[in-house]
Length: 135
Image: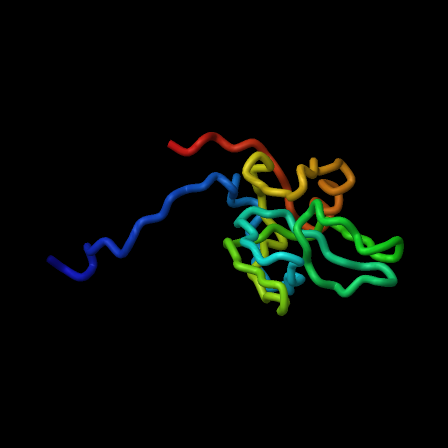
């Protein structure tokens, strides 16, 4: 058997990415350490910390702002599952642009994404559309 016809692995479609247009843009970001260690799942919508008390770090959408002087703005979508501890922030890959299936995206604390948050993501290049279920 030729090396060119060997199977190198498999991929399972999870339905997060809904279309190839607009083009996916991946970058890195700093995810803020957690109060209790845990796993943040692929597809989690992330907000960026800003305002007077902001630190420009990312948190899962649905996280409460730390006081009146921190603002959390919907910003990116997490590319891969990541373990986050309680002592160190974590550098993670994030989608800054692309077309995603909102039904496959994740928030925390039973947060429902608002139209203003969708607008913030859209202004950054993240769009949502319904996708056909995986076959």
